[in-house]
Length: 127
Image 1: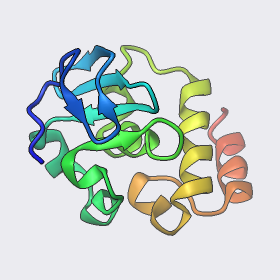
Image 2: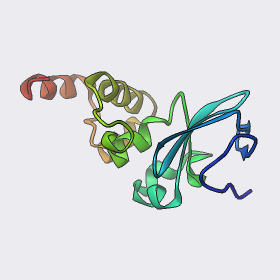
Image 3: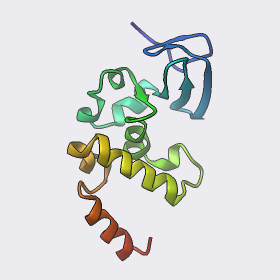
Image 4: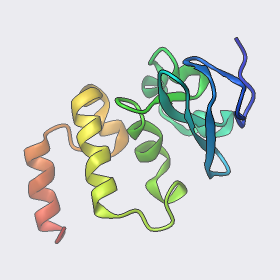
């Protein structure tokens, strides 16, 4: 099924009808449905995400689930494209999500695959 971008309220998503659609920038929209939520990115933004990270069931169409996949577009495209001033809490939440669900591809997201190593690097950088 083809899903136009940007998704709008009442449109179809892989998770059902869209109940809310909040723009996160020109290439991403935060969506919610009765069963799920997530992020939908434009085809242009999707092409900027490394191919192995587009392999989840929905992300090939630009849909990233809220629980396990939301960090992919945030980290791959850069947090600054979603948040004017992304705080450290968002950065750490995205890293933890990548470590938990996408450890094999964490390096493609600029996240060290080992959380202990990342913490050590963060302390060295003054974070």
